[in-house]
Image (cartoon, rainbow, N blue to C red; front, side, top):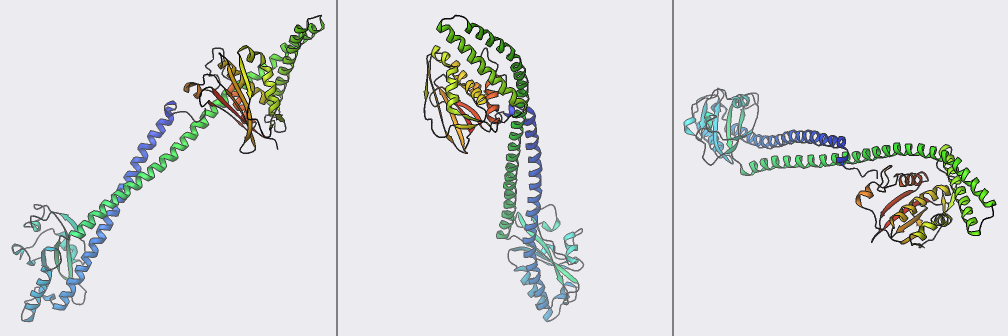
Length: 457
């Protein structure tokens, strides 16, 4: 059936799917990794910048209150200025979470440090200090590498990570920078919040990438399924076109032999025959007339009105006619027929000959499957959407999984003398009439065929 192909049956679709998975995973997770890194960096920098700005405002306010600008400019401290400078140093040393602080003059000399060994020293290539002297504030998280920077020597052993920033100290009128204060802070709560933000950003980006990938994968799988179904229908349509052309040729070719058979039967009927032989001859004439009517209907449908939209058919009449056609085979194989559950409107849209052809195909398959006798149950009932559901259930052995997969594929059959076109044509006729044909195994055994037909109001 269309739509039941697996990816193994369509290697080109499998290759497309693999290419999509690899490409989309690479693109999505590369994008999410970049975005999560940028987002985490931005959020952490904003958190640290806010903390640094608070510290800068606090220290600059102390410098203004204590009038300590001269201390950074190298002016000698006398009288009250000495006390004011000491007060500034006390405030710097007591900043929350600070384990080291350095006070720099405008020329880069360490005026005071919590590490006495650094006092009076200068450090070359200190880009952070140079930026602070330009009035810039650049806090950063630093992982301790005790041999990387001279000013990291002598840090406490229990400190592995800290926040470092240089705070510009402005003049009294705020017009220029007079010095800087370097602060090493190890705020547990802030560092935990920074790491939590980074972790959440990465997890959020990963989850979003997974959701996006799964959504795209579902769309691609759905599109692939539709493409495979359309491809299967196209292949089936091409096969059925060949079947149609062949059937038309066969139908044309049968008309002359059927006319000859009918003429011979009529000539025999004129002879002096026993009654039972005359009945047989009449059966031959009736069957030839039925075949002739079917061929004429088939050729007309093929040329002019393939849908048969204006025709009507009585399902009960078609069932009885089909059963009469198979009466001899049913008796020979000891198969009983039960009409069950027949109710509601039995007038369907479509040509009776076409519907009879589909029903004949179903009955023929059921009879061939029931080699040891059994029962065929036939019934019809209303179906949703103003339709009629005609059901034919046999008590045969049922169908294998392989047979179920190839039931409606043209030229594929499990019968030794079969062509594999009966059910394919039957389903195409049902769909052309606006209905459907499906077969499935029964609940216990046998096969249940359901022919859906549009009902005439």
